[in-house]
Amino acid sequence: MACVRAIDAAAAQGSHYLTRVQFGCEDGVHKSWIFIDAEDEEDARRMVPPVGRETAVIVRVRQYTPDQLRSVHYNTPMRERG
Image 1 (cartoon, rainbow, N blue to C red):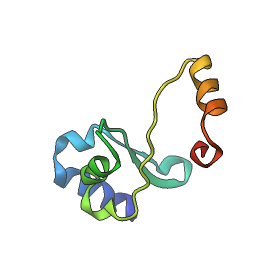
Image 2 (cartoon, one colour):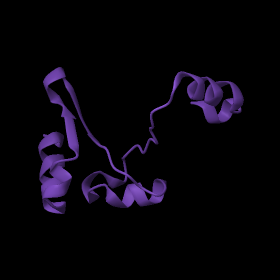
Image 3 (tube, one colour):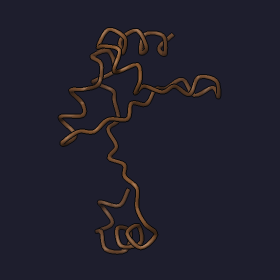
Image 4 (spheres, helix red, strand yellow):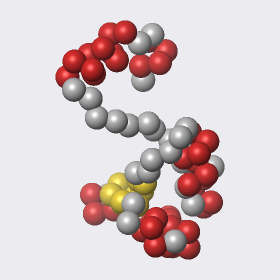
C-alpha cells in the first residue's frame, strides 16, 4: 500500500505532482519516480511529498551525446562516477 500512500501524498501536494509521478507497480516494482527540474539536491528534496522525503533517492539525470557521455566517464574521478 506504499504506492497508494505515495499517490495520495502527490495528490495532496497538488495536481501538478500527479502529472509528474510515475509508478512501476504493474511490473512488480512498487516504487515511484518523479521527474522534476531543480536547482540542486536540496531543492529537489523539498519538492518530494513529505511522506517520501526522508527516503527519496535524488538522482541528477540528463541526456548526452555519445561523445559527451564518454567525456563524463573518462574525465571524471572514480569516486564521482557512480
